[in-house]
Length: 170
Image 1 (cartoon, rainbow, N blue to C red):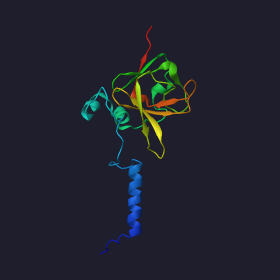
Image 2 (tube, rainbow, N blue to C red; image 1 turned 180 degrees about the horizontal axis):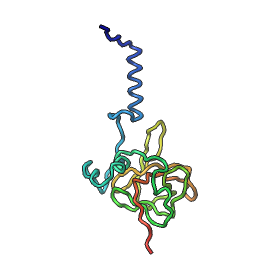
Image 3 (cartoon, rainbow, N blue to C red; image 1 turned 120 degrees about the horizontal axis):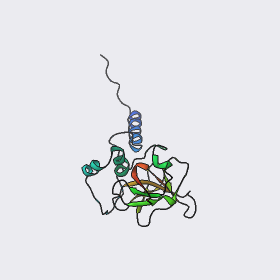
Image 4 (cartoon, helix red, strand yellow; image 1 turned 90 degrees about the horizontal axis):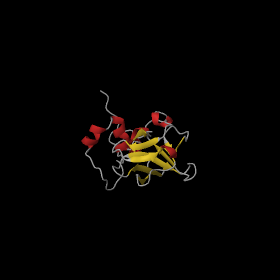
């Protein structure tokens, strides 16, 4: 009968380094993820309540800060006049006149509606970015970058599943 080879100290450290690396990248189910924005919000629901009103993909994006695949959202190509609302709580967040084609594959805007969003520092994926979320329910929308058009120079790069579009009437 063959006995298992004893683990060396070097093997032990390599295995733990691989485990930590996989966990940091979110490749393991027990990886620590940041969940939605921190702070006080007007709308607070339990996980079960959010899951009851959101699709599984919307839940992953809005509540677990996941990202949809580039070019997967119909809202990326939406050109009509209207308003984009939070898919979690219906707060009006972005107007179509601030939307632009960034070429990134995600709906992009150069400014939100006043008092519609909140931000926080996001230090994931080996860089620091500005995360943007709904100021009313804390739902994750996406990130803000400094490579947008005038007049703000900002690009609010958002997940289409985090938003609902309501066309202008009349």
